[in-house]
Length: 221
Image (cartoon, rainbow, N blue to C red; front, side):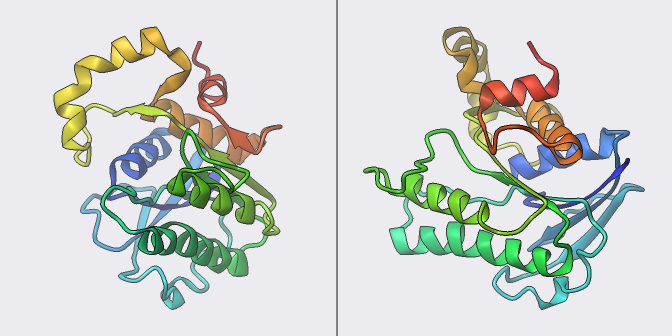
């Protein structure tokens, strides 16, 4: 079975990296990217829907029907953001999108990019980790065919992509050192994309997918 995938966040580093693997994969037939601004790229597998406001998803209605999976790669940093704004742009926005695609396609696998250190108890001291934990927990309560939370640690970008964050371009030399000291603390965007495709197709025993799981799913050592 070839997959039809809905993907958010293609104009960011993580989403672009995952999209890149989807377009390369023979297991993926079609990708609908849902963006707030144009991606400015063309590919035979690629369709694009511009949604300026992810809290108003009327234009998505009917468009998600017939897809096999949704890869939610949209996210914001909590740095410099007050807790209410971060909650709205993380929890509220994610849940709003998830419910919108669920209305169109209940028989869907939903893959959420969370983060290492997420607090599943929702009771820890770190505010962003509590918000991510609540997002994971409440996504898991929705009646998707499958729902998986990916927790990559450090991410090694894919060379040649346009949305790589500047800090990675300057500090890329440190990634091999981090991998040597903590091999389960870092993964590549390629591995993340491959792992998400595999989970969408075959499922996985764990709903929370850590770096070691990502590497296993991607076929890495």
